[in-house]
Length: 265
Image 1 (cartoon, rainbow, N blue to C red):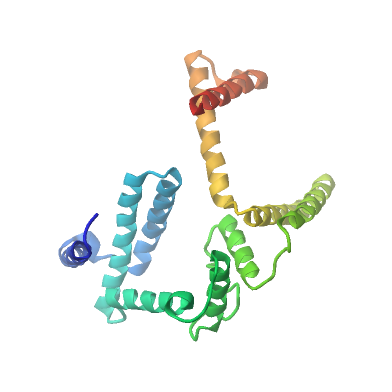
Image 2: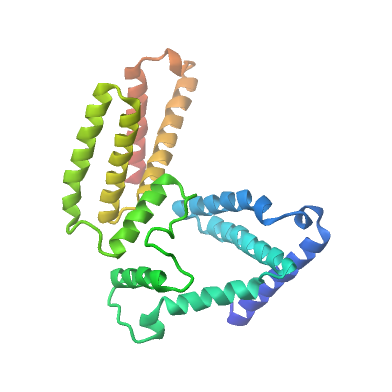
């Protein structure tokens, strides 16, 4: 690992490279906050994908791409005289120190749960912080992640089930209401009830310390992997999936599952 001095030198080198690119590269010179925003979202998702796969090399690479965007935004801010990278770092440090009174002050936090509860309460008290508990959840978050975050924030101020097992009655209630609306054929009410059902499942996941976005993405990857196997096998047999029976496709699907289990042993 690098020394503190080497880390500072590396960050300084990045700032120098950014200055040069902003001055001499036609593409970099024309970028704005808004033009970079879509790329920032893409880079963030690429980082999340690498984190999910626990690919250390890719994590390091994607972190660099995200860091580039942070430095880029700070460079643009310095050109307009609004802020620079020092402002970004200092504001972050000030916020971290303020929100960790159990480290930098006299507050006692015996576990991570108490730290999170203190964090939310401090955010509400901050002069320039969120006006309400849920106003700090970005509206642009994907729905699944947003549901998890609003529930977590509500939990941090005491609005939650007393025991994780208590949530299952709500889940069952929501699925029954969904089934009733589906049987009626009411599209609007069915959509609303399906949302309530999903929200209750996210709540259950949170209470059992399962990240629903991570869980669903792993299932997505599993489905893609198994479906790919089925597709490969049908091609190898000179067949077309559309012409095969469901039982034939199920047989290949189960074969893919068996091979995965064998690989894990």
